[in-house]
Image (cartoon, rainbow, N blue to C red; front, side):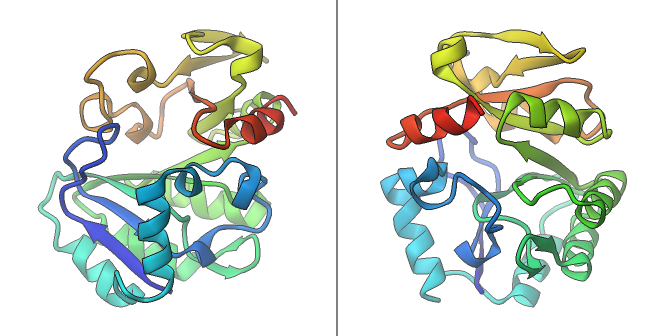
Length: 227
């Protein structure tokens, strides 16, 4: 598997910060968004093309070289892991504890954050909590509001896809299960990026960040978001 570090992202939503991509093989089979299910990385032409080249070994590096590149980033750097792909697995739907720990160590002194669609089994949740406690923010990505509330109540920073059919595109915020959902500011505040917002990089936040389903496969994703 190959992994790629782009030192200055050209993605308008992310902003000009370092960002990475990981091979498709890192994605958990349990993720219902995979393939035609509404995956953001599959729905964008340039993102999908880059992913194809990464899978073919035409871009990116092997794991150890990639981790060294992360470690070489200047201290204090805000960076986003995985515009496409997920954390490294050791088995289907099971995170690789050693490799995640290596990534966390490479992030020391920096401000990395990411999202994972791995199911929050006892082992995966333990790995995610340890990463968050060590300064590398891993958001548990939920497919429904109910699942998101469950993750948040297990003390994990959580994000979720939100149904546009149910809430509209400008829903801003709502509460469910005693937990506050807030809409990603980049969806409605012009000029807002991951670089300027930083909300998803805060591991101890009390709110769930919601991303309204969008893209060429929004219909499929909306069905999933509505449970």
